[in-house]
Amino acid sequence: MSDAGLPLDQVLEGDCVEVLSTLPEQSVDLIFADPPYNLQLQRALWRPNLTQVDAVDDDWDRFESFAAYDAFTRDWLTACRRVLKDTGTLWVIGSYHNIYRIGTILLDLGFWILNDIVWLKTNPMPQFRGVRFANAHETLLWVQKHKGARYTFNYRAMKALNGDLQMRSDWALPICTGKERLRVDGRKAHATQKPEALLYRVILASSNPGDVVLDPFFGTGTTGAVAKRLGRHWIGIERDPDYVRLARERIAAVEAVRDQEAIQASGERRALPRVPFGALLEHGLLAPGQELYFDGRADRVALVLASGHIRCGELTGSIHQIGRHLAGGPCNGWERWYYRQAGGNDLAPINALRDRLRASGSADAEEHNTA
Picture (tube, rainbow, N blue to C red):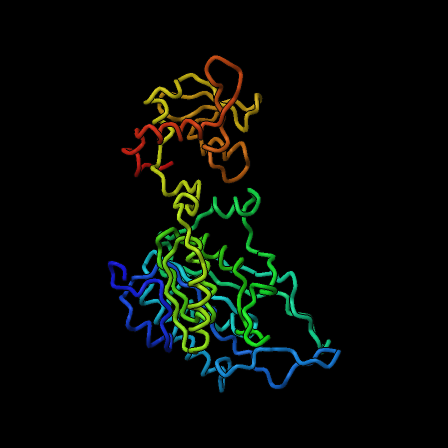
């Protein structure tokens, strides 16, 4: 149990709306939901070789009407909203069968959409009947509880995960296959088991070590397995006792990370004390009259002023304002301006000076200033 009395790191058996009603209000940092898609399958699917496709034909995916599905969606989303912290976010995944209906209900309930992510399946199931395009993607909606509220987004961790390139909203990942796919007597244990790689991105991007991650449609426990691996607490809600048993066995076999440094979202500067550029002058790391070089170029030089502004030609302003003018678009001046190191001609980013100031502890008083 946590300080808030949450049943941490447990699978709770039961209907998600009923179980959610027993949890404290505003107690969860992140919710990932993989609800029934309401696929409306009318008949069995067969491959050209006359073998039957193991499709989603479970009772939990059957609804008598769109109105019934909408009511079900509104109920579980309302219950999730109650337990989600004001600074928390929610992810929900779906296909064309349900994601547009869910999106409307999310907005009606007051959620604000931050991103829609397209999961591009690198190995999708073919369209066996040949009557339309193969369904090769699913959509994830990432929403916050209140528009404009502070929320967690580990941008730099996502960039690092993507080879130091900004992570885009199209994720090319394979569906769950091979050893990762849980099977019982040779058959899929769960028809819609999601790949751990997908949950890895979701959890790493939008939570921090020690946060509470909740999954109201836990299935065989992918969310819990990845959360445990990344040092997050987790709560799973699942009504099928067979899935509950499989999820518990699966997660028990996952070894939790012992090295806390290994699971930190490294380089996330939002969690660090903010440093105004002028603090570099106050602490003698830069001096008035010193030159800065935009992108390290000798033909784009600015003069450091005693006020903490810089002057480039006829323009005077902050490192961000002048950088934005030179870049022709949004600019983080800390990452674009370089200074000449003492006693040599080598250039170094001013970001290194900011890091040095933070390391010395002198930046603590500047925490609430604008970077």
